[in-house]
Length: 108
Image (cartoon, rainbow, N blue to C red; front, top):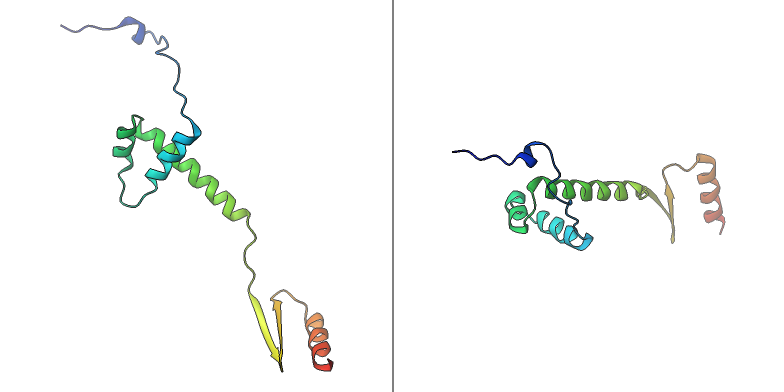
């Protein structure tokens, strides 16, 4: 004999969606980022769906990528040694400006 629950089949609401604290999410994502961790098994242990944990992890990684791309990239510097003086300049310096700096160091 098969018994069906009509309310569920009609699409009646099952209940309120769960709300997870930011602290719980952070701990779950931290655990999911550990090396050699099975994310699905961790989600089951925490009592959440694996898809939910994968989504939280994806969102965390996206914010990490955005925050690191917002940082200025380190510019390669050139070093020029003249006697005891060391001149460090970026690669985008104009030739005329570099000549002026070298001339100033040599006359000092």
